[in-house]
Image 1: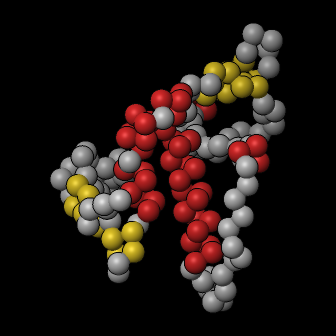
Image 2 (image 1 turned 45 degrees about the horizontal axis):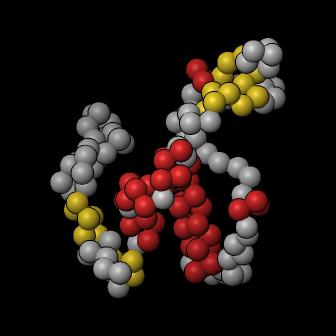
Length: 143
C-alpha cells in the first residue's frame, strides 16, 4: 500500500478561530507520516468516501458514526503504545466481535431531534435510523 507523505485539504475546516475564520483552509497540506510512522487515523478518516464506494452497505451508516469507530480504534491503540503521565501503558488491545459494540455517537445531534413518537414516548430522531425511544430524565447539555 502506498501512503502519500502529504494530504491536501479539500475544503475549509469547520472549526473557527475567535474572529470566525476557519482554522484550516482548503489547500492546506498535512503530513501523513511523522518520524517514519503513518498517522493511520487521519489516513482512514480521509479514506471514508472510498471505503463507502468499496462497501456499499456502509452508505446506510451515518458518517459521524463511522468516524467515531476509527477514533475509538485509534484511542485503543494509543493507550496500548503511548505511556500515560505515570509512564505506564495499558495492556494489549482486546478487540471483540461486532455483537459487543453496542453504542455509537452522533456528535452534532441537537435537542431539536428529540420528539414524541406515535405512542407518546420520548424519542430521538437519528439520521439513517429513524425514531429511537429512550428515557429522558434530564436535559441534555448544549455542546
